[in-house]
Image 1 (cartoon, rainbow, N blue to C red):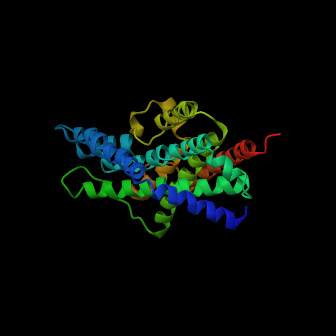
Image 2: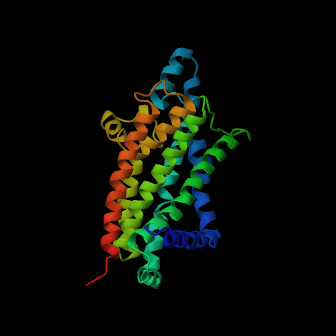
Image 3: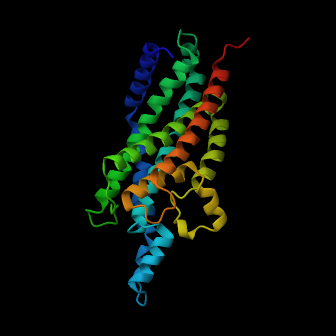
Length: 282
């Protein structure tokens, strides 16, 4: 990779994002609606305060269903970070498709920039927005608690190490899926095919994770699948640091190791697919 070419391409991709405020506003709308509608509407923790339940029983239900989080909204808000990291990266590959249709990518590929330069620039630029949205979700979830709605309540002691683990988990998850969707964008020619393939990947991965579902409400077979899901690994790092690790079988660094393994594998496959797609046609 040539640093000079890579940095120039990265600046160009960032300028394209900055010059499209409508796309940024649309990306912000989805997590806000989820927090305001789904998070508030499905905050079923209130059901655990019905008469007849002792404090010990209430704590047992909480421990079983939401793994030590003070309420479902707090559990949900941490999961929304993983949800946003994945859904926001969908458009990274879609931009590649449209650049191919308009001839922009062909001109870039004809320049001295290598496939690694092109892939690396789009990966970095395309990951910045999901990472920013993830932290926006956390900030908004905390803010909601101060305006009379259910909000994110942090009950754990988040020190410098914990904050670093949270940042690393969000970074790895965003880069992982951005690289995958970029590779699909370079490989697939038609937008319709791209979105069909992406939805076939995106929805099953999200729905088999512990991002939105209460862990205790899952059947045992789904818990087994979810425990290896990269989205689950990332959000569990957040939940351990935000709510404490009492109800988790592993420390945060163990989930990070699994997430790193996913990232290395997915990034390797993505780079191979991209090099093949951008190789000169004989």
